[in-house]
Image 1 (cartoon, helix red, strand yellow):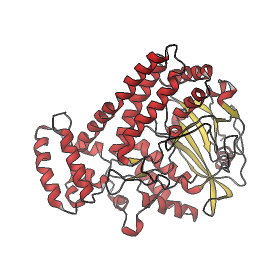
Image 2 (tube, rainbow, N blue to C red):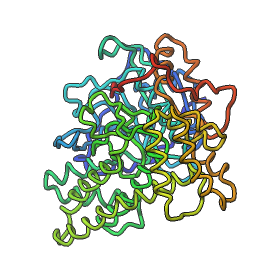
Image 3 (cartoon, rainbow, N blue to C red):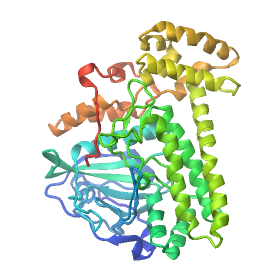
Image 4 (cartoon, helix red, strand yellow):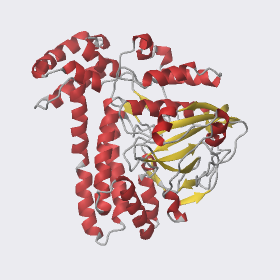
Amino acid sequence: MTLTIPFDNTYAALPEGFYSKLPPQPVKAPKLAAFNEDLANTMGVAPGEAAEMAEVFGGNLVPEGAEPLAQLYSGHQFGTYNPQLGDGRAILLGEVVGTDGKRRDIQLKGSGRTPYSRNGDGRAWLGPVLREYVVSEAMHALGIPTTRALAAVETGETVWREGGMPGAVLTRVAASHLRVGTFQIFAARGDKHSLQQLTDYAIARHYPEADGPMGLLRAVRDAQSELIAAWMGVGFIHGVMNTDNFSISGETIDYGPCAFMDVYHPHTVFSSIDRGRRYAYANQPTIAVWNLAQLATALIQQMEDPQAGVEEATEIVHAMPELTEGAWLSRFRAKLGISSAQEGDLELVTSLLGRMAENQSDFTNTFRGLADGTARDQFTDPAAFDAWAEGWQARLQNEPDPQAVMRAASPAFIPRNHRIEEMIAGAVAGDYTLFHRLSEVLANPYQDQPDHADLQRPPLPDEVVQATFCGT
């Protein structure tokens, strides 16, 4: 059996100013650690022998039809503009059109130095590779738009971070790797021709119904509004919402210092580098608006009447908070078992969240517990829940099947930080048992799985993960 990837590349057909063509750098001793057969089937990728797949997904063998390249982009990092970033440790092998008709990028992450690596080594270590594999696949199972993981390969090499770490390469799959920063770099350079080419390409690939630059802006706004609301609904914190990590397609991309909350608090931050709490849980909707404004600023540069563009873009961007709040409220209504909208629903949701923050309530277990009658156990002062629940029960009187609605909106399982760390420690020691177990359980996050109830447990005091890191 030979690995077959039906490449159908379009980004490589753009002018060379959009990327640098180069192959991935070979590794010493590639070994296939994980392969996503379900995703491969959807993509029309025929798997081969493990050794061959390790060579391809480790970067040692460029498959037929691939046109490897590193993409160029810039971006705002924690609010400060960096004029040139680009794929410093990733190579886009090419694209495939799957059996479902969807076009997807195949990218190797951790595949060596590129012209955009700056002072980096272009490599990744095993921990962040497995974290992204598990978390991105969990997000997909949760029904949230996301990049996905096709394969993970151990390289047999040592990557130096805080110390020597085992190297690895992740094969990431995305609707595309177009980011706000991809547009920003051409706008900053005053390269209107390339900016127009990129805009036309993005519209054709993602939003063929969009009419020109402002149509694209509106489509990205709508997709991102839904995405941010989805993050909030599962307690997800991206951790580093820089404009170079903000996807045009509306997918979650770049799982660096990401995490799911255990104890609920709106100001929760995990990223070790986010000392100012810029990307805290509750700030994510605001940052999404800020990022969209940067895209608007870039897109306006190509318009024949920039002033008219400013007025239209301003209207589009200013509409985003209301759209996001509407999507957020819809999701949280469902988490309370509410199918229909009524006045007072917003207050009902925010009152519960406020009480959860005051009572050290676990986010996931509280909302799942609303369906099975255990939410009260998540409060240090159960009376605080009881006082809220009286109004909630009254609100549910005319709802047809609130339990089913709640179970469909609130997962029983998330990739908890302490379990991810435990999984990484095991894999580094050569034991992938927890990796495979998490992958299996998180593939069905809304189902009760009594045999795996321990994975629902919040961390003990000595298991709490205080900070997460980019780390790749």
